[in-house]
Length: 591
Image (tube, rainbow, N blue to C red):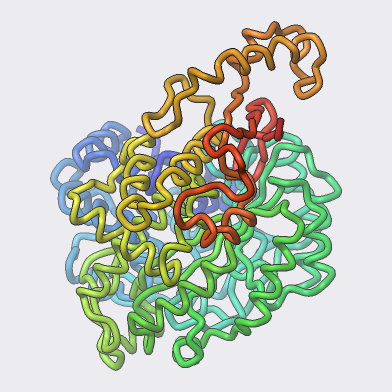
């Protein structure tokens, strides 16, 4: 039987891939790659299903890529594999096992060893050991922890020596492409493993451009850079951003994790010229509490960050994703509320409210007792309480996070939410009340039906701001049609019977004149009415600024400057063939 070194990844989702195992195989000598087989699964598969598939592959040696999201299921497999594949050497690698290998080998003494840190060169030599018996002893291979102890330290790998992972895109169909042009991070954030490696190593720009062109030529849907603080090297970041701008194929989206407060004027100017949808930027804010930022060794100027975000948003072409972390030192409930409101006020496309994970090997891991941090003993090692935040408050923040995810991050309520916020002292209080409303009513938050989200929000608005219920009905109707050409009309939308003839007349006229829908050549009026949607509105719900500024004036639900309340209507035409590439909203025309 041919020797087979099986490298195994268990991903969080089907759309994810594991660049680590592809990098290990790519780095192996050309003659040795024939002995390497890759297997990718997801955590949604049962342990028995994965176990059976590994068994059927008949590996000679097994290697697992270990992270917080897959460590539980890998631990289950480590117990069962020796029963069905006795005497097969099993190796582990990855951040989940690199920092306490002694503990892991005590727990699983049948393991052959653990690869520490970067694994490309270590794996190549390990493969040579099994295939060519060179070197003669495992103890001669650097970067391992064996039952006999540590082997010599493995120096960091030269980024230019790592082959391109994507010689073929077939395994990555309908999956996110991960790509790295640097390793290491100059910052020392205590919650992050990247802070352990201070030296930033860059991939040669000529190599990077060639590889980026490959993605562009193949019109890959999305390339997600895994570089930590992508813009920490100004010239490197500018060269890449200039290249993708100059060679934009109109399809590919690039994702970057950046530090916004160190952005320079020329970087912002270039990014603002990008095609809408060409790039999305993830910006880790984490907290605006100065004491907290100092404690976690996060170097950040919050004022400069806000200025940079505002400047980037002026271009209306970038998807901005801002992150906060709850459970950090010196951040209590009220302090986190301030952090939330300040970041929420920036109106990013996405606001991720995350919770501290005490990662093995991080400074936070070493100082957890000092900060009174209680966290889960098993992955994802998430915070349960701190000296400043109780478990009850963590649970409250969890419920708020669910509301932000359902309503804000879904981008389905872009006109309703800003208006509804005016009914509360601040945005945080609104989400807090909405979370309480869900709990009191017994509504589930696990994938509620789309229409149900709208109905619940209307019920919530009616309870807290009943005088403006008619306005909320129109706002929700507008938001719903902005996203989707509905087949069935929602119950909260106003009756259209008195406007049916006027709507038909509009489409009959449009069939002849093509004043508003010139792109729909060849379609008759009935087809036009099905492909688009025309909706009458009593309130100017399409104009968020006017709605929000006029909130108090509409305290009794009446219409400003209308002499015929309930009769005067404005019509909005929703064009679903032309959508905003950032949020997928339909193009609207005021008729």
